[in-house]
Image 1 (cartoon, rainbow, N blue to C red):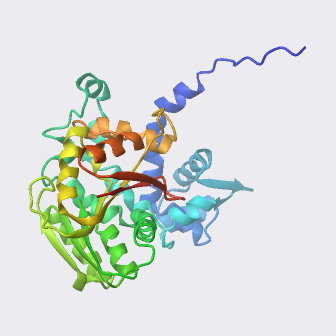
Image 2 (cartoon, rainbow, N blue to C red; image 1 turned 120 degrees about the vertical axis):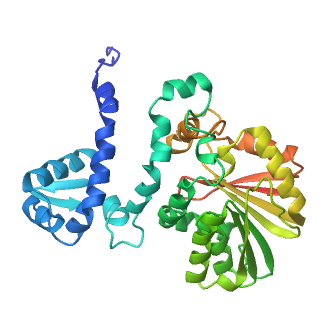
Length: 339
C-alpha cells in the first residue's frame, strides 16, 4: 500500500507574488526598448540586441534572462528567441501587436487604485478620487481608445459574425461606450447595410470617428456625445452593443441602463453584451474571475458578473431571454438578450 502524497510547504508562491512588480517592470522595459522586435529582426545575442536597442550589454543580458524566466523568451547557447506568443503579440512588426496596450493597462489612473487595496476592501470600492475610472470624461478612456484597439479587433469581428451571421439586411446599431469604436465598426464592415451610432464622451468619440474613417465606414458612422445614462438614444435600433461596460457598475445601475436600452430597441431587437464572465464559483476561469479585483481597485461598485447575474439584470429590465456565447480564443463571452 503506497503512502499518500503530501504537499511540502514552500515559500515560493509568497516570494513570487511579493516580487511580481518586477515582472510588470521588466515587461514594460522590454516593450519600451523594443527587445521583442529586435529579436524578431534576427538579433539574438545580448550584445547585438543591446546594440539594436541602445542599451548596455550587461543590462540587456539580465533583462533577457529574466524574460526567459517569465516565459516571454527562450534561450539556447547564449542566443535568445521569441516564444510563439511573444512573436505574435510583442513584435511591433506583427499585426496583432499588443505592446501599446500597456499605455492603458499601466496608466496612473488605473495603477494608483491598487496602491492601497486594503482600504478598497474596507470600503468595498475604489479609493481613487471622485468615482475612479467611471468619473465623467476621465481622460484614461482616451488612452484606452488609442491603446486597446489592436486587442479588441478580434473579439469585435467575432461578435459581429455571431450577432449578424447572414449580414444580409439593413440594421440600425447603437454602440454604447464605444471607445475606439471597433465593435460598431466591425458590424459596419461585416454588413454594408449597417448604420452605426457610437455613444461616448466627446473626446473619446474623436478616436472612434478616426477609426471609422480609416476603416472606410465613416459615411455610415454617426455619434452621440455624453453619458450613456443621461443622453437620448433615439429609438428603433435593431442591435445595441454594450461591450466591456456593465462590469463598471452595480446591478441596480445596470438594470436602469438596460431598461433604457430595452426601450431604444425595435421589436425583435437584441442587446449584445460583451464581458469577462466567471463561472458560478467566481474563481474560474482565472482571466474572467480575476477581473473582479480590477473593478474593486478602479470603480466604486463594479464587478465581474456571472451569466446568471447578467441574465437576471436583463430580465428585470424587460428582456425576454438571454443566451451566453463563448468567443474563443478570446477571454470574453457574449450575452445576447432578446426584447
